[in-house]
Length: 441
Ligand code: DLL
Image 1 (cartoon, rainbow, N blue to C red):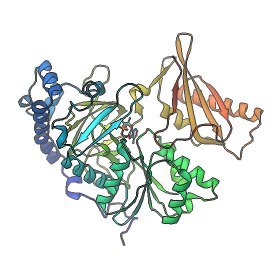
Image 2 (image 1 turned 120 degrees about the horizontal axis):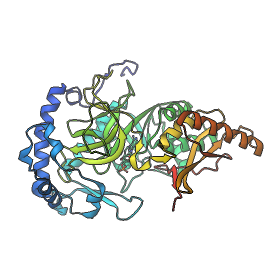
Image 3 (image 1 turned 60 degrees about the vertical axis):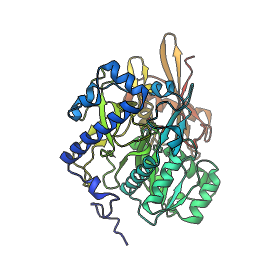
Image 4 (image 1 turned 180 degrees about the vertical axis):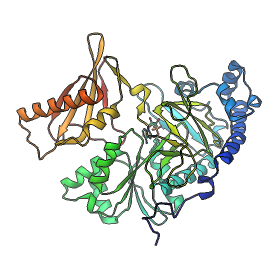
């Protein structure tokens, strides 16, 4: 039996790569970056045009620092090349495509060669092992299967690690609870908001998830706060670990926390190059400063991505981690810059509101934010939900709303309307939660 209590990992999926000295990582990145830039330039008309317009060619890159001369790639570049023109190989040679629906317009289509799928499974296996999954574990995979990368990404990663996968996908929550109880999975993969939904439905069925064998949650695909982590740990009786990724770069498994520290997500630098830029000036920021995460793929064959602007706001750190892995850590993604609300001059992310609400006495960890116009200014109304065991009379709801309003004002510094709702009134998620309703017209 493996000893799970030790700090230093007794098991890494790919120890040599995961603990590579930083100087060796830098050499490997320079070599792979040259390959990736050349592949993009020679095979994708979009990159040929973009590099030519910026006056750069792949041979201009002498060291990784020269990457800053190359142009960024943004989501509209993928849409403009819809569906298959951003690929570096003929469609006939792709093994798979995924797509994200997006909120407006055309979906974003991404493609993989067989080699890309193989590396993805390896990186997901590495991520899962880092999160504490072990060969032989029973893995309940409730990420959605289909065009979304979550389901199949976690599926093939778990298989590669040597786990037994229960491929349930999202939805049908009562059945999920029954399977969790009957099969006794030890690892749970889903969005953090869906994990909350599962625990709640289970309680309604008279089952306390915390008493089941499940002890590890691999949660991602949406922003969540440390306060939410504490809530998930407690309610589900497991250790909640954060995993990050995006379809444009690969899918889940671009970065993952380690079970030992749970303090930032190791970004797998042998396959990706991470930068943080100032979203206004577009200049790269020094290690540790907050800005927009920009990722370049180093090994993707079908769809190299050069300096992809993720819109995700975070910080990087290269401080050593307790687990011994040497790869940089992406500190928790606080949100996307397009999610940022400016309320009377104060920048607010939904995850900041979440951090205030989760754990407040008498409140369920469900919330929604309505963004609307008040004259020329943006304003927010926050909907919270009281716990079933609380007093639900109108006066109690008004008092609770007032209390929450006061907390938000004193912690985040914005004045907002708060409406306290009855148990179950806020819609539950089966995948990525929709927290913000933009009613600005
Ligand atoms: O959400 C891939 C994924 C699946 C990641 C399962 C983790 C687990 P997309 O649908 O392309 O891919 O959405 C990517 O989701 O740019 C972030 O804004 C957000 N996101 C993903 N993981 C996290 C996370 C998948 N751990 C977009 N924390 C990204 C915060 C996250 N945001």
